[in-house]
Length: 292
Image 1: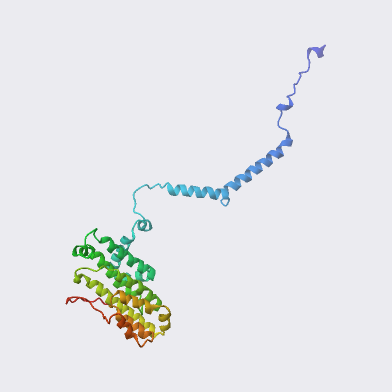
Image 2 (image 1 turned 180 degrees about the horizontal axis):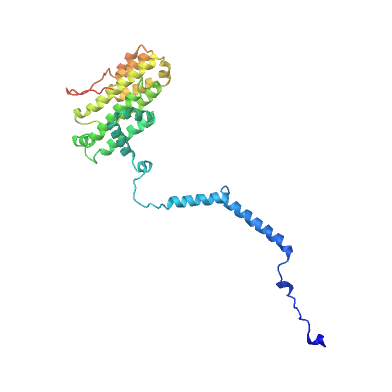
């Protein structure tokens, strides 16, 4: 009776699914956590590839996104990128004029001109002379001469400056000197002939200068026993053609060449050319001759 009146309280059990997670899963979760920790350490390690890549990207972004956005002069390297060659040469010349002590250093840093580079420059000057001619009309008239006078003087001045560079003792190789003189003489052949004899003095002077240059190179080559080189290089024949094109103005150079080659009958070659010596055709007008 009492048992029925005072029953013992009944305790309900929680379902298994609501209880705490089973202990057998703890080890797997710990392993996962360890793996995540290792991955995090690997990513955050300063020497890891990912971190280095992120740092490089951040550096580039920071470099582009400068905080001090304001006007500033260009660095010298960028400034020189926009300067054409003529302006750059003028700048260097001005610096050397203002500071003569830098002339030797600048000259030592500049590359030595080659035959190809020198002739290319001379050809550019010659092209400027051709371009200065007026269209139509008499190409030998005074009007045409006045149009091309400046460009013509620039060409002759450049020729007068470049030629000594390829002469001994500045140039020790006879073949190099003769190669330059051969093409430089062709430039003189192509110079215009003017109706007014006075205007032809510059061309006559150029012939006289180039003749002296040929004589000097041939003499030095002969002193060094390069007569065989002169002969087998065909320089005697080339010079003979130059003498013919110059109408005998370069006769003395040919005489010197034949002496260097050991020809005792070099006078016959002169007779073939009509016995013409150097003739300025100056009509009595005295013109100073440039010195090399």
